Length: 359
Image 1 (cartoon, rainbow, N blue to C red):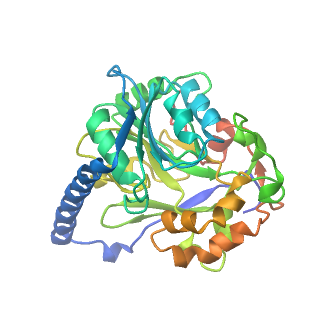
Image 2: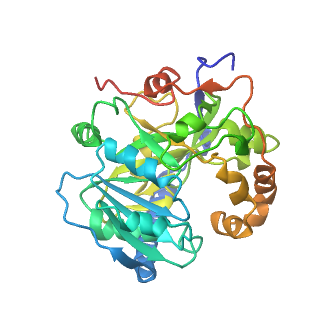
Image 3: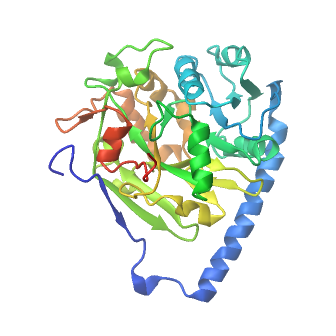
């Protein structure tokens, strides 16, 4: 890359043309994906017994956009997270609190627009919370546009400062686009991770104003046809010797939810597989958004040293031990080609998201 305004990414095909499966193989893959989806729906149904309702969901209109999240010890982030997503027009928050001990549960229980469930069950054993949220989505959100987020993600989209998320949902309905793709734009400070203070209620983007404009790689995987985007500061700093192990940066966070939908891998992939075709990654001209990823607030250093946090957040914790050790060592992610975040129009100029002609 030659500068912050250079093209941000490129798309690759997962297989060479001669390796594209024939009709019988495609039919077999489709059959397996249908059964996979049914198994995931059944898992979510079984996991419902791990959830205890604290504050129930109040009635909502059919046009309401719902936000789903699983959280643990996020009392510092939640005040701004809630305020931002209220500002864009989220009507209700359906939140699972996973055994927080920092006041998160009480904070959420006091919010009039939050429906709260709690559990002490294993986050990892619930597919990192996906099973819990899958049940809540199926039970309460079918027919709604649903925004599924982590507490360290701020959702932005074209014209978000002036147009509510209901307008975005209406535009997606008009285009018959059942899901919206988004890149996780990973934000970081200029110095060491622990060096920038953060107070609850502050805008985390002010503490983490930098990001990598590129390069990003995108390719499709079979049989779910899910997208796989990699790049950004975590790959550059922690996985430079083996980029294939770097985190996945694409998500489908906003979906017109049906009871037969199931997230396959966090919000990175959906079933049925056709939903994964809603976005091709950086450079796709279709309407898309972004998730401002605020993972690298100063609290990340202490969390990364916590063995319980490590055990619950990776399918193979030992494999990522070196990564957590590096985070606990309080590194500097900034480099001389970092780009200061200026807003969604900047991301569109860089090809990281698109208004898709929505003016």
